[in-house]
Image (cartoon, rainbow, N blue to C red; front, side, top):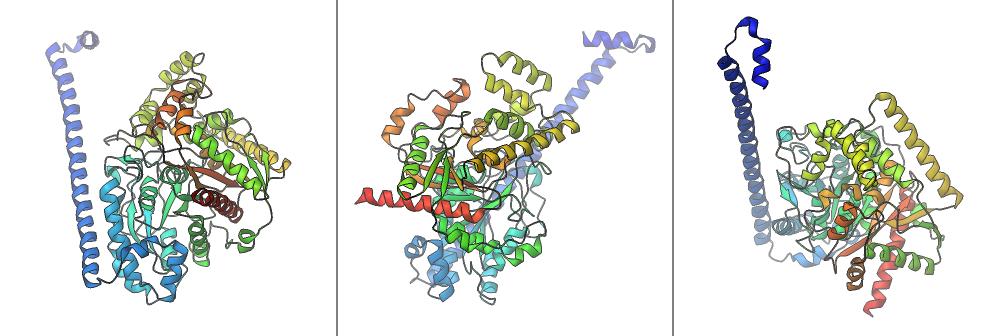
Length: 589
């Protein structure tokens, strides 16, 4: 039929049908050839990258073995068992050498990544830095090995976001946060895995593969800072730097049983941290520390909030760490909720929040129920529509010419749907699955610059509404669910929408962190069988399936404070950690 139309249009030129057929067939063949050539090019780059990565691991192994042979008296176990604060103190007073600590963690990181695939690059420059750091004044993190998320710039390495197209884009200088860490004596020694294009709560990509949960290899590490969380949770690093735009520090930390902290946007410099949607500020992306306990997060924040950072990035307000606020012991007024009304929290998560609430009450704090206002509006109109304001076009462009990782298939398919089809599906699904219908409609974006301004104004108005509710109850901090326990493999990439408990505080730009307080019990697993969710739609079914089979896995709660109150948030996290550890100690006795 198409050929008849073409011939009809061209009768005056007396074009033979065979010529038209030849042109069309030739064009199709050319397109297929170009596609094949591009796929071969991408495949070759992937193979080259894997070879280069393996060579780095071999170099890492050789360096660690050589040190071990030359220093047989250095025992790994005592070093690996030390909390960061104690380790830093021993490094400073000389009872431990930076060499013994670096090479011990180097060997352990290699063992962990061979098991769960969490390290993307070995940074051999760390061996040179080891010598340099001993010549300078000892900073707060003197001699401490640090792991860095893949999208945070280290000079000479690409911030690929797990995408082949960025493999050749080597960073010309360290990110500000890495410069400050080095100034404080820390030694970045590895970079860690992330989800493809970041905006996903799994941790897999075609460049580096899938990262597994250190406690259960059938479970996800979470993402996008999943490589960091898995490495630290597996004992291969004592301190790491991640980034968080919706959940990317807090979800993987919760899945892997460690602590993580997302500061207020711009309290810590993000210069040199690559995001997939530059310029998007509907949900603020911010770097933050990840570690085994709250004391480690505090030490890292003290090290970062220094004159060096304020000098290197003038966008960061010169607010040093306020020890007086952090060290205060006055009782807190704590708001709490165990369900936001959008995604029903899992039985283990709900129990963890309620148990923590009770423990805090017993410790002398005041606990006040809180309900997040207009959560549907927040999720659909502010977060999703704001994040994908351009109809997902900037994000989708990142995948042009790429192999899409299986962790992204579901998400990218939704983003790539033609707008007309999104509208039709949203209309059809509205009566039966209203939540999914609203999500599809939000993926259309804002539609115009005028509507973007309105979306920004709506976000600011919602923030004021939330703060008004907070102040009306005279709250200091908030206790609420994170997301967890860890998802079964194959589910995290299909449930980015389930980050409502965490992405709320990116939209609001509040500091927030997670603290592991419990583990999943057989009773939780039994109660999960009755899980229905709030909508009874496919997302609720998927959520139930995602968290099944998690007995013994960690469960973390979320702690939140108002903007610029990092010290208060960390103080609250420390209190949550303290009461939960005391409870577990009583159980052991």
